[in-house]
Amino acid sequence: MRKVNKINIPSLEKARLRNKESLTYIYSHSIDDELKSKFEGKKFFIRTYGCQANVRDEEVMAGILSSIGMERTENKSETSVAILNTCAVRENAEDKVYGEIGEFKALKNKNKDLVLCICGCMIEQSHIIDFILSTYPFVDIMFGTHNIQDLAILLKEYIKKEEIIIDVESKVGDIYEELPSKRNSSFKAFVNISYGCNKFCTYCIVPYTRGKERSRKMEDILKECKELVDLNYQEITLLGQNVDSYGNDLNDGSTFAKLLEEVAKLGIPRLRFLTSYPSDFKDEVIDVIRKYPNIMKYLHLPIQSGSDEVLKMMGRRYDSKQYLALVDRIKAKIPEMAFSTDIIVGFPNETYEQFLDTIKVSEIVGYTSAFTFIYSPRKGTPAARLKDNVTYEEKVKRFKELVKSLEVSFDEKAKEMVGKTYECLVEGPSKKNSDILAGYTENMKTVLFKGDTCLIGKIVKVKILESHLYSLVGEVIYE
Ligand code: SAH
Ligand code: SF4
Ligand code: F3S
Image (cartoon, rainbow, N blue to C red; front, side):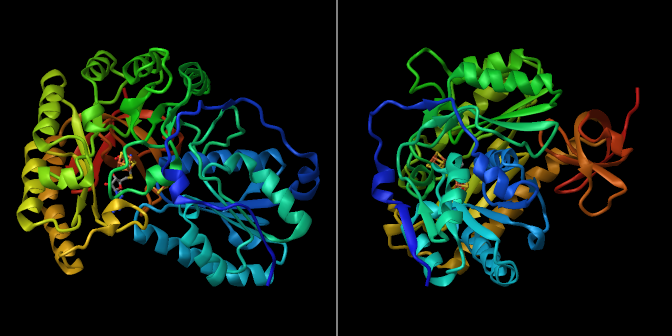
């Protein structure tokens, strides 16, 4: 048995606190020469689960490891440092991670120098750390979402003593600027505008794993976006668990509407943002979206449920009427706006009638796409303590019924696109056929078409020829 060095262990109790102490903005980061000599030329592997916040964290970790001279690999058997960047939002996300940790047992036996790190939202929970320690004792380092900037320091500690290291701070969080970062794409980028979440929806683990909602300073966000524009990036997505409350903690007049407008003015060809919270969404944002053609007319607006009783139980601070009124105000000013959403089916004690309310509201909105989930109890959240009278089989049945109903609207929206020409950002060869390129439209529909690989990373005009439920087929229009 190896010794376990618990530098900090997580506490959901502490993570729940939202104290008033002011944030620290940290602008410096130093790289260790000792680590360079140890890791220079060696390979690292990172697998990320979960949302774009995690993807952006992956880019920072890749930046830190590159700065000590390492190179990325997708081949686990040649790697010296492996990182699994985990998600805790639903049980099935966690199960996938456990499957992959298991695979490392044989690799660690073959390669004694391989350092296996697990980080991300799962590690913010002490019961998960205990489970990993007892089930996968070959894991070397576990660190939390607030400890990413210390990756190099943790590696150094580990090499010195070869004890298992656990460093998970449960705190409101600081803001680190100017950390090294190696972006996954050379043409589309994600830019954090705020971290954490204060909403505490009763089913959700994110406010515990990501800390207090805290906004980056507008000038720092604009500087990062300007650099991306100068590097010829084609698309920026501004990220926050609730973008609409951006600036509330800054007390300098910064709002999301102002920020969005300033970023749009930098001239990035495509600008998006994620995620909007219905009752925090301000009408000024509608005007900004309308004013700038480079802000995509696509809005991800999670409804979660169409039943007012269920929304209340979920701790969502709007009802279906307010949600639909917002959608109407947006449609009135921007008729071409496409809507997508997140929906949870089978919240504890949801009745069939309440479930049908979700279908009804969805039909009124007419979503172009949607992310649908079966409710998954998350330890430590208020909803997980509720006794539930709905069986899992019933939840699966409702889930299938919801998807079928949503697909009617997806299909309708896709059919309306046939015969018209849309701009597509070309992502790369299609997953199924490398002779075909895949791109996506302003409303996030995937389009498949023939074309030269030199188009990858560019925005091209594509005429839509056929529509399928989840993709479209088109031809490039050369002008
Ligand atoms: N901040 C964003 C994203 C949060 S996580 C937002 O508020 O929309 C992404 C989605 O996962 C949520 O919108 C919700 O639909 C889903 N989700 C969160 N917790 C869940 C749980 N315990 N069970 C099932 N789905 C969940
Ligand atoms: Fe979770 Fe709600 Fe915060 Fe979204 S707004 S991250 S669903 S608590
Ligand atoms: Fe998952 Fe954490 Fe994102 S729980 S959805 S990776 S904030």
